[in-house]
Length: 168
Image 1 (cartoon, rainbow, N blue to C red):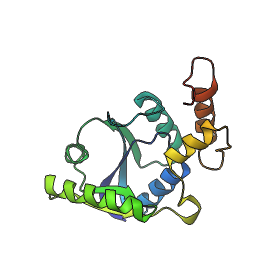
Image 2: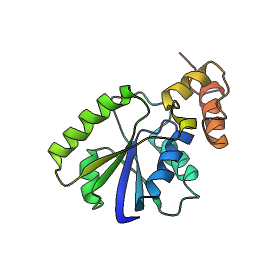
Image 3: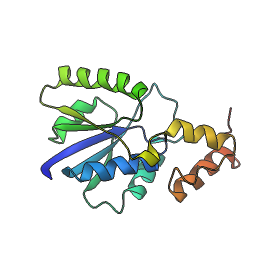
C-alpha cells in the first residue's frame, strides 16, 4: 500500500455499489481516500448536495480510511488543498475512456504534480451507472441490486412521495 492520499471525485447522484467497489479497490492502494462529492452546475441532479453527502457518508461508514467532503471548484485545486497527488476515476466502458482521458490530460496540464489512475469496477458492477439507476427507478423498476437499501428508499421517496420530484 502506498502511504499517500488519493481523491475520488464524482457527482454520486446517487452512490451505487459500483462506486463502493471502486472505493474498496482504491483503499487497497492508498492509505487515505477523500471521496469528493462534486458540485456541477451543468448537471441536473436528482439529489441535493447535502443529500448526496449524507448518502455517501452512510455508504462509506465501514471504510475507516475514507473521508467524504464536497467541492465546487476544480478537482486539482481540491487535491492540492488536501496535498493529494492522485485522482481516482472509474472506467466502465470505452465510452467512459474518451471523456476520462480528456479530463486526465486537462488536469495534468493544470497541475503537473497530480496524476490520474483509472480503476475498473468488478464485473458484477461494470454496467452500473447512477444515470441508469435513476432511469430504472423512474419506471418503477427494482434497483435493490445496484444501491444500498437506504439509497433505494431515498430514490423512491424522491421520485414518488408527496412533494418529491416526479419522473418527467
